[in-house]
Amino acid sequence: MKLFLTGGTGFFGKSILHYLQSRHLACNQETAFEVVIMSRDPQLFIQRHPEFSICTWLRLHRGNIQDPQSFPLGEEFTDVLHAAADSLDIPELTPLNRFDQIVNGTRNVLDFAVRVHAQRFLLTSSGGVYGPQPGDMPSISEVYLGMPDPLNINNVYGVAKRQAELLCAIYAGQFNLQVKIARCFAFVGPDLPLSAHFAIGNFIKNALYDKEIIVSGDGIPLRTYLYQEDLARWLLEILQKGQSGQAYNVGSHETISLGDLAKLVGSILAPSKPVIIKGTPKGLDRNRYIPDVRKASEALGLEPAYSLRQSIELTGEILRERSGPA
Image (tube, rainbow, N blue to C red; front, side, top):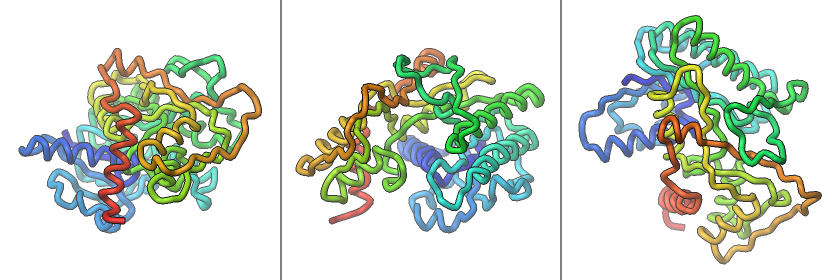
């Protein structure tokens, strides 16, 4: 297996690299895989993550998905995993920039996959492609055909991911490329940004480094969280064994409200710190972002290896090790 990985320096990419690294070290033998990740600044990435400098199976290539000529054009790859798309709220990234990055970037990576004769291609899409989850729907399955409002620019991420999925379907039909889609929901792990818009990351940061754990809203939205090692394993399994032209939800089935999540994080990582819920419920309607993951389970045998409690415990343990003595 020779894998070309975009987005290798982001949360998804680091999750995959740490998973492969731990698997290789556990096996203590020659690797049967090679990974090339494309980065705009490979040297900076290695400075920040020196643990990857010892990986003989890993090579960093300087490039940008927006520039087709910066790809490693003289090589061939068996697999391409496209995980490059900023999901963070970055002020300088305009809606048009974000749309171009997702849609045009995906087309550039698909063109590259065809050019290097890749056998398999995986797009990391998003549960955001379904649009708002109806209140009477306990979980969203892959057959649900809802969508975000395309006239609301705040939905550019979900709408652009839908367009990227369509491009994948077109290339699968026109170029006989095995294309698989991973519709990713919410995750937790030590590589998740702690100061972004990810609620669980904020709660973990509060628990480890602040005086109190803050829920900025009313705490009633419902979420599930899959540990990053499970995320990496699922993505690689879908890439290798998923059916071409199919989408698979990637996430957990362990549902929890954000208020209860904050309390759980506090009870595990900082039992003495108070949990402050700033908002008050305005009605009975709950915002939901809950995947139905039965397809991944039944078709590919994928199940979470870690419970939510275990995921939080591991995340806190690893972050404390990384930060060293207080």
